[in-house]
Image (cartoon, rainbow, N blue to C red; front, top):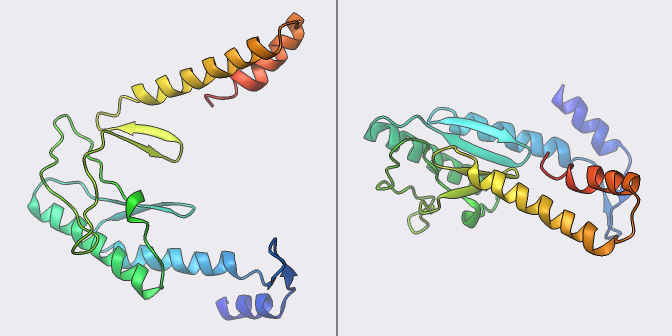
Amino acid sequence: MLLALFSVHVEGKYYRDNSGELTDNLGPILFLIFINDLIKCCIAHSEVYLFADDAKLFEHILSESDEQQLQEGINELHVWTKNWLLNLHISKCKVISFERTVDKSHTYNITDSDVIPTDRINIKDLGILIDEKLTFRDHIHDKINKAYMMLGLIKRNFKYLTVSTFVLLYKNMVRSLPS
C-alpha cells in the first residue's frame, strides 16, 4: 500500500513552490513516516504525545528507575533525530513536573553537554501557559491583558462609533481573543 502511494506521488504532478523551485508533494507523507518512526522508537521507554510537529515524552515518576526510563526515552529521541538527519531545537525542549511539591533535583540531558532546562515555572505549549501547579492563572491573566489591549485600541482609534458598530468590533476583536 505504501509503495503504491509513493509511486502515485512520485509520478504525480510537480509544481513550483513560493521560491519558484520545482517540487513534488511527498512532504506530508514523509513527515508521517518520520513521526510514526518516532513513536516506535520512544514508546518502549516513555509515553509519547504528538500534535502536528510537536512531541512530548511523558513518564509518571515515582522512583529513580522511572527517571532513568524517561532519560532513556530522551536518548532514543536523540538517536532518532540523528538517524533521520534532523536537528533538535534544544532551546525549545523543556521539562515540567506536575505535583504539589516540585522536585527539580534531577536533570535530563539530550546529549552529554546539553541539559534540558528545568528552572522555568511556566511553559507555553500549543498557545497555553502551563504552570507546575496547573492553576492556569498566568494563562488567564495573559488572555485578559490581550483583551484589554484590544479594547483600548478600539477606544483610541474609533472614537465616534455607534453602539451597533462598537458591539460588532467588540465581538470580533475582543471576545474572539480568549478562545
